[in-house]
Length: 154
Ligand SMILES: *[C@@H]1O[C@H](CO)[C@@H](O)[C@H](O)[C@H]1NC(C)=O
Image 1: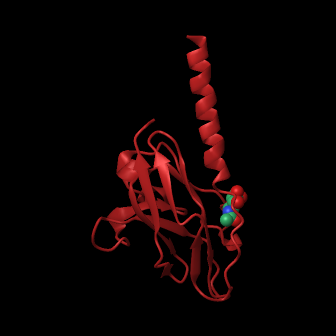
Image 2: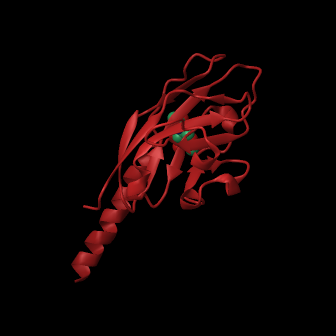
Image 3: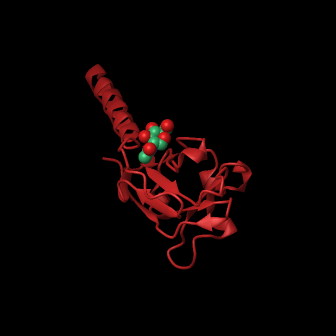
């Protein structure tokens, strides 16, 4: 019995560590002064109940000072940037959809560092889909999207 509990605990700790590590790949900064976004990796597979990290960096024209990050989860068809598709707003968390409130957070809150990575906790099957980043200053929506595929628990 104890062995079982320990194994389960160890497993979940390992998973969590793995999840944290995903935020670390050193992405080469893209050329500054233009709008660009890089996801590394470009898509991820997440497991229900665990967390998922979208590891992302972005650049922007020098005259724009990024202070507000917004993330959308795209509908299966139609555009992502719609008020009701918002899952994260760094200035006004209340704007997020019910199911995402308090589940999504930035890894780096200082957006001037060009790091748009977010962690999504307590992954659910419905989280499968494409995600898109928008910077309110500009404003500018980065056209490239991130794909998350959710699998059931092992
Ligand atoms: C983004 O910031 C987080 C937290 O500081 C860090 O762990 C991560 O490595 C950064 N990601 C990139 C791609 O620089």
